[in-house]
Image (cartoon, rainbow, N blue to C red; front, side, top):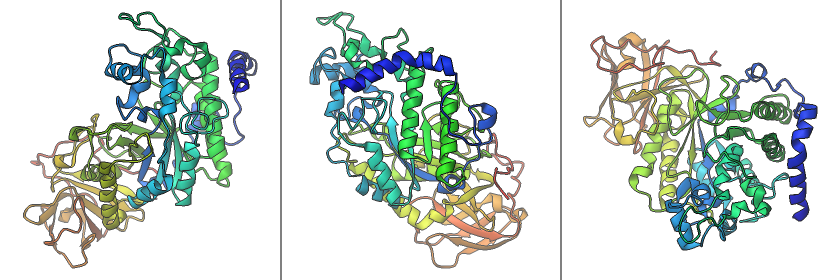
Length: 536
């Protein structure tokens, strides 16, 4: 271990010199180069467009302190007066003596059963799975070649990424990893401070000890919680090396960065390398997906170079290229006994999924885990609700494409931060998907009409001739008629499922009926006739 730490230290010293001399990073041969123009050749693979739904394990040592403090415990425990700091001092002692390095050792993952969890995720409809690679706490969840602070050497003493990967691939899921540690250099700087008052004033926290610089990063004046403003070249090189090691060791088909493309040439080189290597793994076919965020404080957003990701928000309308929302059924890291307002129920997830898929998006859903690796009863219920719903309505979701418009009804809203709830929708809110061959249209009602009569205004007689109408999960014939006001369907007395009900419609060259001029339906950006990229 001492030898590994010494090698890391020596590398940190010489990396700037090596980079300055070569001025290039190792990128696998292939069509992609480390330029925006080259990366913009990217085309989203068919598997991702078909998948629609994935599950994410946003998990790590932060879950160890009994779920206290949520997402930023590793930073906030060094902020005197914060609730995390107070909890930490009362529970473990002062951070000068018991720091985050010691919290890591509390994370045992002793009941972690990736096979059981993956079975639940598959039943819930997941077509891809994403493991945390490293969060802002600068701790790698894989057998890291370049970073001594990893889950094989510390904490659970397990290759978390490798275990997740084996469970996912065994069940035919696509596998991905997420990285959030580009900002660790500034994010962990609080560990270098000290109390400003009180009995421990001016006593340095454990991050000030050079022995732990590998975890806490060298001291720097930039102690923001966001993207480091001017990190040294050595940090950018370390990020590149660790990411390349992650990609080479686990060959993910999906890579997620918590922000844009990090660190200029370093991030672009990593992305070109990822794409080129993925093509070699898949016999010349590009099956790689890279998720990046737009307008965030971490890296560059390059349109067309990757798949846009929206954190806890949904686009206002259909985007011509596939995109993704990432959301969690609770806080990002496990916190027990959450108030209902911080939790998402099964119905909440289902209506959100229908809305996203109708807009050409995917949903990546986080299922928070306790420190021991288990999930709570509320999470199990969400997964059970999804499994039951997918069994009835999966064909209206998987391998579909958006229609000419994504929907109709009062809940057509512009993009906002946060997620709408199932209670925000009614039976007047309809979302549309279609089969890839355009032979079948699905109209998903986000509520059940109290009078049993469902009207789809966009399928009025001016939309074209409808030939058949059925209700997924219902075996009998339906009483329906196509009028000037819409497709009017008399629903059966028995609901086929608990939430979100899908009509299956066939017809000749169906087009959305124009809305009446006096209609009160709000106008929405992008709520226009669209041609989705990749359509025949």
